[in-house]
Length: 321
Image (tube, rainbow, N blue to C red; front, side, top):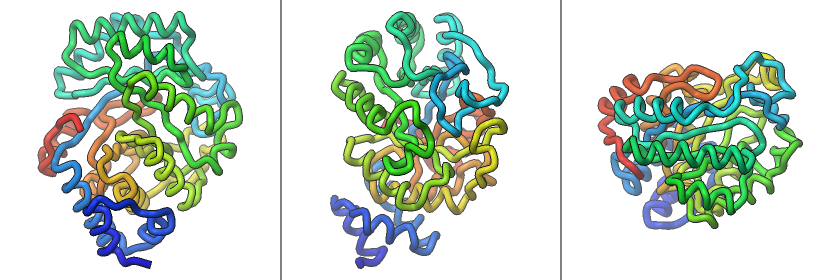
């Protein structure tokens, strides 16, 4: 097996690590692994940092039985329940985020997928944002089809978010109301419509190291360049409420290996970052170079002002990647 330095040079020169090599990397000394991953990040992404925010555009009563989710109707968490927000509410929040220096704003809705009527309503909101606010619009509306994605692109959407969540092997342990292939199909439908796709997963769902590597390889195969790495926040009332929380060291190791597999991607710390002792700072010197800022869907996040100060301290420039 090649050593860490050899694998680092392989990636820096344009090569791809194999599954076996990625598993080998996962076992290397943490500081050396993270230093190598950050070297790869600097070469492929320089000091650019992609920061985005999200709005919970429709909350709760989701038909899907994802075991981690506070918004599933199968779980009993007390999460807020409301229909689609008005265009006015969505645009107002976009303006607030734009004024804080955020470049991307994502509208996220609960449920397996939005109906055609709901998609039309969201197209109106997107058009208003693009007309009134200088911010890029992303959406996460579930398992839509190519025609719906084309309408959203025409309205001004630039990117679709749809997490794989975990590996193909582990997916049935997490959700049984839709499949891993349903996820893949939706990702490819968005790409066929000419949209960029943001896709990643959640760490701490009971997956193995091999599951994590397999998911990263799936993302590479799909050509994904924006990869949210969420850390499970065990929500009371979900089947995963007693799952152990991951540590700073766990997350640094994960993002470092992901950087080797996906050298030119935005490795984006997302949900659960607030549970980390340093709020993700050490991950941003271990290969991660993007984040979701502000509140998450049903949990508090880290303020945009705090994140902007941290990025300045680390020498990053907020910029599209």
